Image (cartoon, rainbow, N blue to C red; front, side):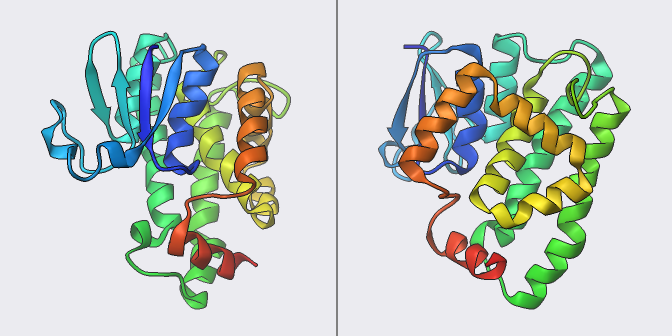
Length: 228
């Protein structure tokens, strides 16, 4: 066993790490977040405020925060760009993904969506986010039929982008046209990454089990009410 991933029984932030673990062929085990959170979270050697937590069996080390977990795995499995600029952009991309998750859940559910606020987000802020990823890819050779977000080889940036937008448009098909209009090359990239053998098999199993579940609870109900 290489890793244990502690998260709730949902895709959401877990999928960023899960797609990476599947891509590199790591042996891992899914564990329920309640085994750590909240009682044990501050007792870890490297404490984190909330799941996901990634436990690396070989080093007996816990990692928290989805971007940090992805960057660690990227380093371990050589999925980080080698140039300083693109390495920084890989981290920025993962942080952008995390920001989009925060925004689309209305600050992690601090307030449930209302129609006026949602319409403003969907028609302005979300398209701008999609264009950020699109412009980044185009600047580094991404094409509709090939290429990756930051150059000629796949990196954690592609895994994160796919976990973000691939999961979003699968869970909410109504947003597929939004992505196609504002970031067509990103839409094609997500399809290519989701078609990679290990990731495809994982997603087929996951989607058979969870359907179109996204983040769960009141937050997801609020989102679905707005989108539908």
